[in-house]
Length: 234
Figure 1 (cartoon, rainbow, N blue to C red):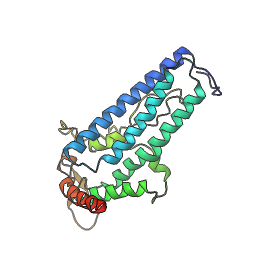
Figure 2: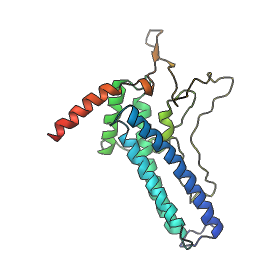
Figure 3: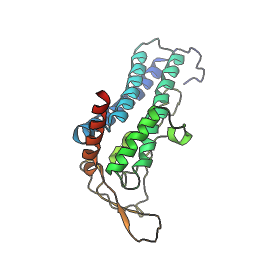
Figure 4: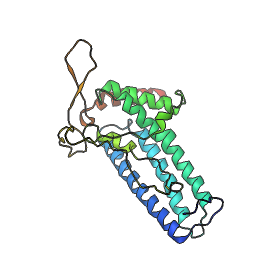
């Protein structure tokens, strides 16, 4: 592919290559959105709204890219502009809420307290209360042997699928060496079952039990949030 991006018209091979890349990215985000909507239906009406919203926004940007690529006379400059818009949403919105959730849901998982902290941290992000850290813009590294499937929706690497000549759809997946890896647990519901996490030394030998998504404190969270939202609307 040529490196001259100034109003360059694509060759047919380039156009089809980019269309294939965009289609792969849309398919991955469809998978993420389906998972988030399922969890919203099964566990919490309010908690999953923020990641669903920004995942849909990324998909919308990808769909605009796809529509523009259907024009055989599309130019590279416009495509780069559309790509930048998609990457900004992915990095400054979606990845940031994933990074914050990774911090606020650790180390004991989806307890009611952690769910509240995560929800209000997302509210703070939305309202600009937290400065942007460079590390927040990077996708979440997902370990399928240890992490809740929830974090997989934030693991897609940067969507620079036009400007990066070597781009392939990738998720940031942590692969442990076979000799060090824990046995793969039953994840038929796409969730890791209870695991023990060592607590930093406090003079106690105790372990902290991880509360998985399925058994999280969403009922308590929903009762409080629904009541608070009802009060605001009165």
